Amino acid sequence: MNNSATTRMISKIALEYNGNDKGTAEMVASNYLLSDTAEGQFNEMEIVAERNPKVEKWALTGYISQPDEIGRKLKDEEFAEIAANALGKIGVTNKNQYRLDIHNSTKHKHIHFIVNRIDISGKCTVKAHDIGKRFGKAVREVCKEKGLITDVEIGIQKKEEMLKSLTEVIRSEDNFDDLIVAMKKRGFEIQLSSNVKDGISGMRIVMEKDKNHQTERVYKAGYK
Image 1 (spheres, rainbow, N blue to C red):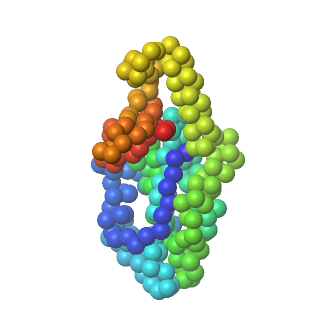
Image 2 (cartoon, rainbow, N blue to C red; image 1 turned 180 degrees about the horizontal axis):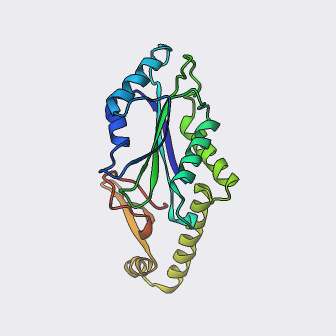
């Protein structure tokens, strides 16, 4: 599963975003949060974070996204369990405040989380060092425990599929323009990289099905 995690300072806007998602968000889990509003929950988190003033970036935020390659749609409770288990592997305990929200407005269902790294006793339970790398490892461990394909395995499969198609097309086409058309028919787009000094300097091959036109963010899909 694609994933991301980072430590940072937040405002109530982060909680508002997670709880909205164009009206499609659904909160599937929360801990030590009494308020029903984003502002109220932020204030609760901030009060607890102040118990450890040495930690400025007290919030852990991120997401886990479910790719099509898993082969089946996970139930919301399954998705929430994967997120909770992965967070537990990096230090989140039952004494940390957190909120989990599932978003459905884009191509792939994904779950967002906001966690207070400072637990109710004032201890920072989630180390910031290599947090993105450690969280990715934790997600892969949970996926393997549940018999689900990991993001690394998906990447390997896609690269093999891309290389197989490219090798076959190179053998059958005589020029680069025809190669681009042939790859397009197989579901791949070739994107050329260029600069003023060197002209064309490389290319990226993108699977058409990996493009997400529903998000405002720009992601560099594909392989160089």
